[in-house]
Length: 116
Image 1: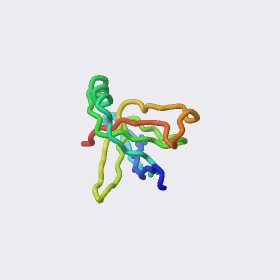
Image 2: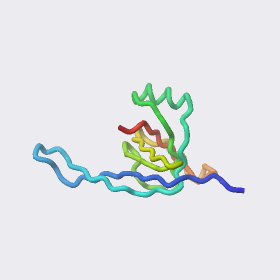
Image 3: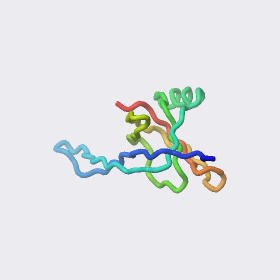
Image 4: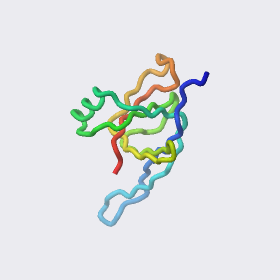
């Protein structure tokens, strides 16, 4: 019997590499592969709450594996499934549980909106 497993996603981390002539920061994106991420549909309550709190509509939720130390706030994320590439933008702070109290391999949920 096969258990639940996630997919590999690309998280685009940003690092400030300088400033432009007007003093605005210049960033470089670095793609980072993160394995075993669950991708799921949000509930009606999650959609309603995120719209009221952030003014953004959730299109999916990401389940982040235990032990992951990446910053998931306001990041671009992409993955390929069934021959199609999907790209989303995370928003809000991740919903994090206490790793030891959660029986599965994932402990954090990240809200995502459509990118672009």
